[in-house]
Amino acid sequence: MQEKNELSTKERLLLAATKMFAIHGYEGATTREITAEAHANLQSIPFYYESKEKLYQAAVCRISQLVMNDYEHLLKEIEDARKQNLLDKSMAWNYIVETVGHLSEWVLNEEYKYELLLINHDLLYPTKGICQMLEPLAQVYYYFAELLMVVTGNTDRFWANSYSYIVISGFFTYSNMPVFLETVLKEDIGDLNVIQRARAQLKRDMLTSIEAVVKKYLKE
Image (cartoon, rainbow, N blue to C red; front, side, top):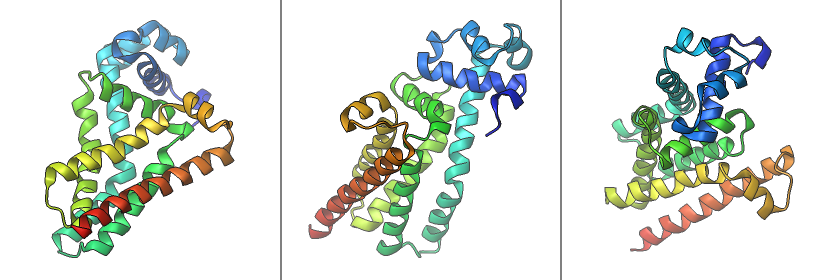
């Protein structure tokens, strides 16, 4: 990521908007706060983005693209394997492990701190941009549900979608409560070693939980 002073005014506005919308929500964030954070003047928003609403949409679009960039290759692999009837239980489990590992890397990622917070905020308090942001996110949930059905042999789509929601949303919750997490862990989560341990623990615990559910359905 470029240093803040190397960014153009347009880019600084986009990052500042992401931060302010993440913290205060769409209604709560003001154009004055956004431009102050971006070290820009008030006229820069209508000049580059026309309006606050379009600036918000641009911020959402950027996050959607980040999600797609991170997961597009993995999702395509899963889809190709599914279409070629190669997606057996072993392969599906490997993809589950890979997806959980990937999601774990997003947790407490300072680079995506406000992007993750904005996703969480809009999931809790939907705005006009949520449908646009949900589409790439929904793809991750959908394919994870597919993997769960293959691994367990359970064809109940409602169950798979619900459990996929529980697992993946858990990562966003974990990542968006850093202060409370620090209190519970009694560790400095600004320490890279602590963050790495937290990610590794989350990955292990998530996989252990998923494995227990898989075993339950395999016994039935």
